[in-house]
Image (spheres, each protein chain N blue to C red):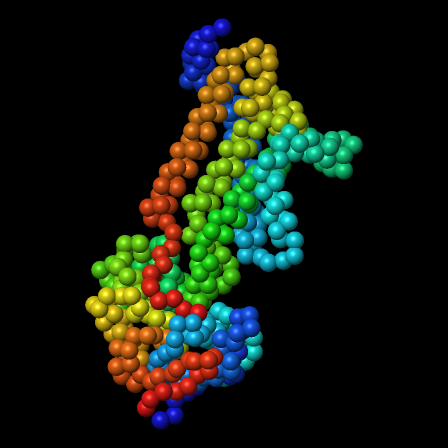
Length: 244
Length: 221
């Protein structure tokens, strides 16, 4: 079977606003954006606090966070499934096979990504940022927001990376969402299903959308980083004489 | 003439490993006084300024501002605003010159109109009007240094601590910064400047402190 014909057919269906396809796309974006909206503020705050905190076990926590970056999403889905299943400790919530369950799973997947990237961004920021803000009378919260503002392009990259990961993950969404048509079927789970059924047209159409989303995310990332090099970042007044 | 005592430090001790960089330093900064702090590289001038600014917690000693005993490293916001420190390598936020000057006023919840007026005043004071909207990356070293000083000055500090404000600037920029320092002293703030630049000694009313072996000594007349 050639690839051209189903691809053209897929594009035609996308252009014709095929409701079945666009429902799947809508569910994907809705769940992923909601998950990111929940995860990002906590992850950014967590990354900031972890960058500045000094406590016993901090190193272990950082290693754990970095390890979670490569944690298989299907395992996240499995653990969440066991928690949310009727016999599980959270079974009474009746969330299994709902968009909420998928969003919870994606929050768990996005959190370590955004948190670890924020941690790296804040750690690599000039330590005098916080000090300068405090010297000028800023509260701890305002000083923190100032530091985050100075590393904003890295934070945008962190959030976009988190989005890229959750919008394309299939394992967790399949397990806790159940791939229910019109309800919990997302782009990746639909591609897996359609391909297994031999319905390549829908699979390719959704694949095109997924690649388009990835492209947009990467273009936004490159644009943000380019802007950051041009105008972001605090300026240090360079002098030759150091002090102690 | 009786000048009010603003910043009083007693018996400050700071150790880095076995070495006492400050070994019992005491200093009184009165309103309208200007001191130039000299000392060899590594003598502890920056450390002393950072301790006085509340940025470095000393191993021993006490600090008081305007009669109020200060907890080391935990200065209240009003004291931090009244006690401005401009480090040797000041950092400007990646906004504009005007926004940098506005930063401390916003933090102090100053009203918009008052902020606008005071920021405009500070831009004029430091002769930065022409670069008010400029990103700090595009400033010359002299303009950047003046921005850092004006950012502190706009908060109407009662004590200004400056670390090597003219180092590595060209002559024109040094003259401009020295002019700002002269006007700071003239405005009645207590000023302590750590510097190697002897030209600063020529500023009116400037007296000299020397830090050596972890101890402070008054030099000259």
